[in-house]
Image (cartoon, rainbow, N blue to C red; front, side, top):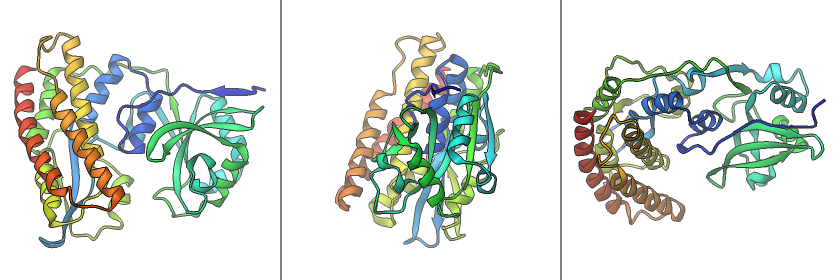
Length: 339
């Protein structure tokens, strides 16, 4: 019997939502993974709540992956376990058995009982990524957003057991566990420049209909079940116009949208550097640093305003987004021509 085991994890660079961090933290950085990542994090979509002009806002924005990322990632097998199935076994033993089989456990628990979360007085249902155990220390290795930052911590066996049993069904948008295994079938995903040009063009021109189809499944249900049915989807750079209008006072702004936008620019910056390294783009091709830096600055200003409950900087953020949009339109147009 093994006394301890810890599966490999990396710090993901895209951290705006946990369904992305979960996948990216268990994959390596081989070329075929990088090329898959670039293609899945180039397009954006957003939901617009369109009740009337004074109640029009973006309640959710995310990357437009061609299907739900936890269910469709190459090289990752996903097994879903319902709460009913998990209740038939000891949860600590279940997790240890999975890890011994080189499987990561992504499980929803009541995180107020996980000391690393520092939320002892408030209910906080959320999934953890469990990637290791130590029998001597009676501890699991876990990953989650601790104090809003994705990082690696520990939880005792007793903490996890209590957190699992304290979870109330329906208090998060899905229940149970998803068990993830990185498979040996590492078929290469070789994507040619024409495919990237197509996705970049869809982003630039806010294309709603493309050769790929959005199949986001239950994640869309999660983000729309509490939103009135009067909403529609928008794509690509048209999202800027809605965000700018909201920051100018038209409606509320969700705190997640600018972190997603910043992650999007990071992916484009890394894509350009990758293509330069592969000789597809010339070594002196302009990078995306200015756009990335300005987007991060707008994100940081916004998050500070959220924490302080202070909207005084919203007009400044709207001006920042207008400038970023203009810079990006030119940069994406040039990038498509250069590929």
